Every structure is written in structure tokens, then in C-alpha cells.
Image 1: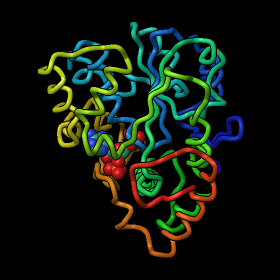
Image 2 (image 1 turned 60 degrees about the vertical axis):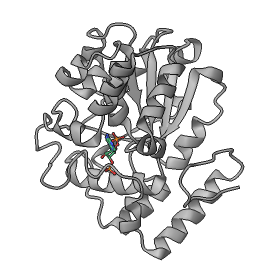
Image 3 (image 1 turned 180 degrees about the vertical axis):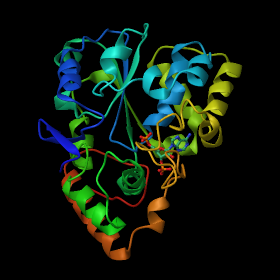
Image 4 (image 1 turned 120 degrees about the vertical axis):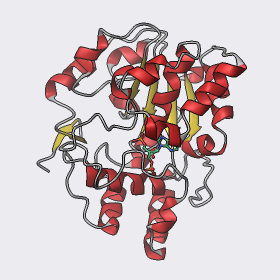
Length: 288
Ligand code: A3P
């Protein structure tokens, strides 16, 4: 528990958040043309941080190639936000892992748009397991089975995956929110980018669009030091333990889950999503 601070019931890593940054977070004033990317951690945040600036800049890849991802599309709730805020020009793009009910007050009166990405929770758990190994500011996750049980119990940063996705489902934002999935991005990132462009009322030439698609390919992002987290000192993120951009595939959970863990995971997730209208692209989680 020493690694965490508790913010309104949520576990957050102490090194990345402070009481000051969270106070600042609560006072943020949104503008109507802001775009906020919301994810539960390990759902494709960095991928969309690669895409969004180019869409908001007429396809110009310069920000993506010259500014670290956490500065070009900063976290609303992280420690560097007060310094970064004044460097941004409209239209601003942000990311956040916060549940809907903990958004800053001005969010609820603004017209800022939200892009919400979900990913198969089994792949989220696997990705997060490796991230916990490499991040010195998070506790040792133990073996995968132990980690997966903590994940299901919500004893991980940002709490339960099901609470997060449920909080952002039908929050009364109307056409201010666009839902996409990591799996759709894997299947057809070109189509997803076109959909995001439509949502943001923006257009790009076909060449510029293809440029964005190319830039955000996994292999190219791995080479982009503004996006691959190699700029972060190894005593924070130890790349000898895992890469931040690790595998970039859907379905790696099959290499990590025992049949028993898979059954338990399905049971818990299905039970907790009962009554929601979530329909996911992946076939493994069925719910009514
Ligand atoms: P894996 O650990 O499964 O590889 P986040 O940015 O929300 O922390 O999510 C990180 C996950 O997104 C990692 O998953 C990472 O590899 C994956 N990812 C990032 N960019 C990607 C891309 N261009 N294509 C596919 N996956 C990507």
C-alpha cells in the first residue's frame, strides 16, 4: 500500500500523482473544443495519443515526432499537468483514467468531447501485469494468477475495470462521447481514425490520413522515442523487465490464463456487467 495514495476511494500511484496535482485536476476549466481521451489503463491510451494530435493539426506529424506523448496529450490528473497546461493551444487534447463520477466539475458544464476506449479486460490484465513489473512506482505484481485476482478485486490502480467501464456507459453525454475498442483499432485502424475524424468534425486529405495510419503502426511507434517511453529514466520504467509497447496484439491473454482462471474471470466480469448494454467485439466475455 506504500506505493499508493487513495483518491476518493481509488488507488493511484504516489509518484505520478500528488495531492497538489489532484487539487489542480479538480480546478481544471474545460473549453468546449477540448477532446478528452478516457481509458482504463492499458487499453490503448498511448496509441490514441499518437493519433489525436495529427487529426487536430491537419495531419501534421510534427508534434508526434517532437513532443513526448505525455506532454502533447497530457494526463489531467498527473503531477506534470500544472506545468504542461499553459503550453497547450486550442484545440487541446487530454487523457485521463478517471471514472465518470470523478471528473472535474467544469467537465459537466462544458461541451468537451470524450473518446472512450475499451479493451478486452483479459488483455488489459496481462498488459498491466507486465507494466507493474517494469514500473518501479508500482508494487511487485507477484505471479500472473495473483495479479489477476487483485485485478478482479479492484486492488490495482484505478480500481475495478467493470466499475470504470460502467461509469462511462450512458453517462448522459449524448453525442459528446464516442466509444471505440482496442480490438477495432487492431482490425481496422484506418476505419477507426475516419470515425474519430467524423466525431471531431474534421477532415484530412487521403494522403494525410494514410500518413497518420502509417505513423501509428506498432512497429513505427516502437521506434518513436517520443512515444515509446524510452525517455523515462530506467529507475522509473525498467525496460529490461518489459517494454511499454510490449506486444500490441489482441488475445495475448490466451498465453497467460489457465482454464480455471479463465472461468473465474468470465464469471466475475459477466456478473458485474449484468444489466448493462455493453456488447464487446471479443468473443470471450458473454453477458446478458
Ligand atoms: P500490450 O502490453 O498488450 O502490448 P496504454 O497505452 O493504455 O497503457 O496501453 C498499452 C497497450 O497498448 C500495450 O499493450 C501496447 O503495446 C498497446 N499499444 C500501444 N500502441 C499500439 C499500437 N500502435 N498497436 C497495437 N497496440 C498498441
